[in-house]
Length: 116
Length: 116
Image 1 (spheres, rainbow over the protein chains, first blue to last red):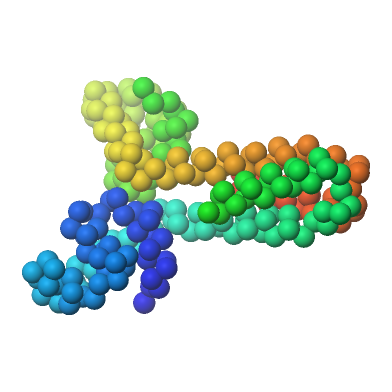
Image 2: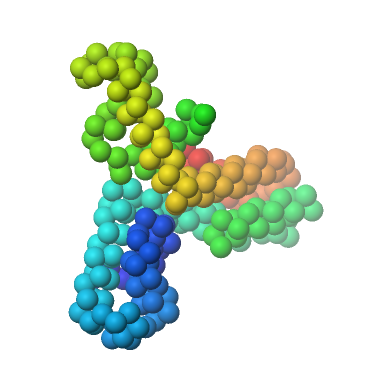
């Protein structure tokens, strides 16, 4: 079973390729935290129909990632930038000039902007 | 008219969502540099048919980017990392300790790996 965090990331990347209906059910469940029954009531369909639709949507998102690997690529970049960030954090600020301190501070800001 | 570099980047991201035929014609033209007539000969179809197919493929790639904006997102990250790289390049190595020099060298390597 694919974990919710990963699924949310897949949705963030590929969600716009889904139909409005698929997006609606996905968001009701994973963003608004409604149960399958609650979604079924809201949309006047059975709990089982909601479940089937969600499974289908998850399968579509997973298939996009299997083809494109863009989430994987994005996560690799994030890992690399986080590593740079941790190196920056370890530089002993005391020993260096004002200019270098400022340069390091700028890089931290940029790294944060990538990671946010 | 969308430039070739951008198109190649779109293909790099979304090419796997195309059919085998669309990929074949796109690669013959943009990667192997064959003319429309040459592709037509190779595939036994008219130059006009090749042209139509290429236009359709380009349109599909552009539409994926309009929906997903993943190339744009990727390019923003690349720009940010390039900026970090240029800041690293400007730090005056002379004034800092061996440890800091090594840390900066590690970060340059990571930045290069992201940008390659």
